[in-house]
Amino acid sequence: MPSVKNPYEAVIVGAGIAGAAIAKALKNNNLNNFLVVDKGLGPATGTSAHGHALCHPYIGRGASRLQRLTFLAFKEARDVWGKHWCGHGVFHLPRTQEGFTKQIMSERLLSQGFNFDMAMPMDQAEANEKIGVQSGGTFFPEGGWVNLEQACHEVFDEMAPERKLWATKLRRIEKVDGQWMLWDDQDQLIASTERVFLANGLGVKDLAESIDISLPLKPVRGQLSKFRFSKQSTWAQHLPRYALSGKVYCLTPEEKGGEFEWVVGSSYDEEVDDLNVWDSSHAENKALIKEMLNQDLHDDELKVKDAFVGVRCVASDRLPIMGPVKSQPGLYILTSLGSRGVMWSALASQMFTEHLAYEKNHSAFLDARFFAGARLAAAGLDSVLAEALLPARFLAGVSNSKPILPSA
Ligand SMILES: Cc1cc2nc3c(=O)[nH]c(=O)nc-3n(C[C@H](O)[C@H](O)[C@H](O)COP(=O)(O)OP(=O)(O)OC[C@H]3O[C@@H](n4cnc5c(N)ncnc54)[C@H](O)[C@@H]3O)c2cc1C
Image 1 (cartoon, rainbow, N blue to C red):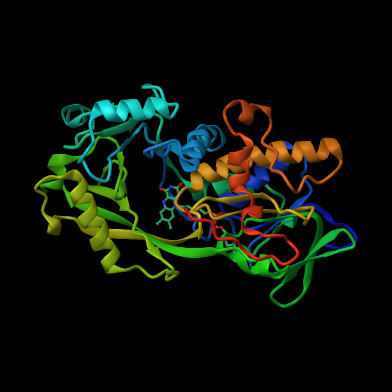
Image 2 (cartoon, rainbow, N blue to C red):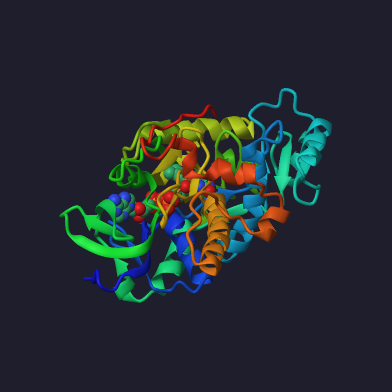
């Protein structure tokens, strides 16, 4: 049992992809005396038990905060999780073909900072030839998917056993004499530390509430379907050559045991945290992918083989929450990664690396700002974007902790 007399330099609560991103940032700063605590029996037992998390930048109509942040985060994702990158391109289909032309999309992409090596607009004929789909869209040659579970294992498996506390659910935290104290659900003190990182998905809500901080987090259930279909089926006549994203997403079908296996998802059920597999979600995934492929395909030929169900954590403004907590020196949050766990965790890892370096160099906590560092600042991460990520956006004066619920 860790001793309160020998505090850790840091404690990470949560061993999903958010916790793994923070562990990388700590190691980058030689802060190696840290503990990871998770209520699961090992790394990635929550939403990050996900083998196929797709990743490409978001393209909206204008240069919104979301568009600008994903533009930056996508590049970081290639660097931070590159070892676990799969696939060689993602084709994005707009929700409707109405109003889509290659010309309009080209202008939009250029205005948002893309060049045509990063994002290639295609009309229907080009998409048919290169991708194998009957709709125009945008091809991201560097897009792909990441095995989140594997990425978490890579980070946590190499840590010494005494720095990992599994099957331990934290119930509350408190600052006592300049140290953060952490208690489990049996009300046992399990650690003390200078720095605590809340990276435990929806569980951040309860732990933050234990120090009177209220965060507008909610669950969004998602189900990914693994389908199978025979080589003689109509589906086998229209195989996409790349991963697709749009109303749902799919990877490239894989040939296995004389048939094809195909990952398709994901359903999006707000305010639901049921981890059971739903037939209705498989049906929804099937209907949407059929709509996206826009071909004469027979429903009954697509059989369910397997499923992944998880619960995303989403904030009311749909952006991630990351950074230090104002007026709580040594407390940091990384949660609300929503459906973009790959990109947001990577951006957070790089920002926390810079932020912790700054704090170490100045021997002081910097709780009012999230320090992005010169490289990310030069890439376009300005203070408006960094502030859009901070927990402080939900705190109207930490003394009364009244949440502000910004519009999307
Ligand atoms: C169906 C589906 C499809 C998705 N597809 C994509 C995709 O294509 N691309 C993409 O980028 N993202 C995708 N995502 C999102 C991505 O999976 C998540 O954003 C990411 O896994 C969240 O990681 P996390 O570390 O924040 O949370 P988790 O992985 O849930 O980690 C939180 C950890 O905290 C632990 N914990 C919680 N409370 C406590 C406590 N009190 N004490 C101790 N431990 C605690 C849990 O056991 C858990 O291990 C998808 C999600 C779903 C559900």
